[in-house]
Image 1: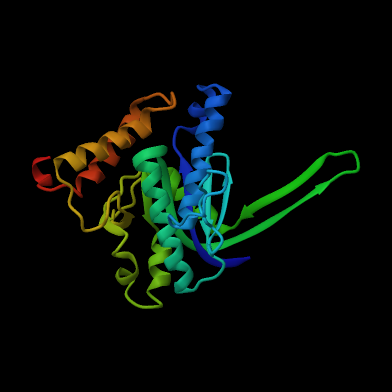
Image 2: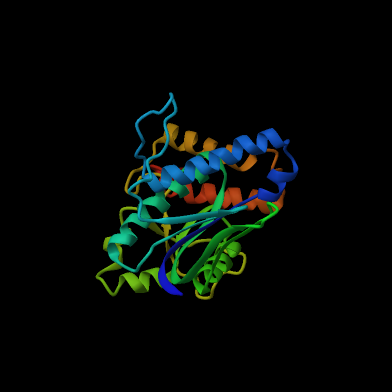
Length: 255
């Protein structure tokens, strides 16, 4: 068991997505999930085309990743600042592409314990025993916090801020990717502080009306496509996500 930095994401509406779509659509859309995981790990770097197909180049990635059903987890091999800087770039890219274009997620970056056990054994008659188990207090804490969020996006847990403080001002490590925001929760803490939240556009960049409306449309489509359906809870999640997006808008007081 080791301490590390972890970014934990849960897809929202995944059960409805699975139940309400034919198998061929599920295969196609899950390939988009795998594509976005790989592109995040590669930080946009691509391999040379092979047979006309261009794939993400993850050959130099130092970040681990595992995808289990509706959960995607990225984590570092150690607690170094170099590893954290790599993880924050991967997290930022994955969060942005999912929330704004592909499939809404609730994410949390934490610092804590995690352990991976993996391996595959095949019996003499062809049965497969496969172990791919990631566990630890860090994952449990991330899951509980993500489950309580009432918006799509990714928040930086206080455990990360406290660990970064050992190496300097946490703001120096977070300012290029996050903004301070009072995240809505089903059970908000008291007092309810502002937290670092990954941006839905380049941090420091203000969106004009056209940019805002296009980004808003992309988020709405990510929430509603794939026959996931809408109810009061989903409408609240979407509304809260758009409210966060408004903080990046020019003249947001009149938005």
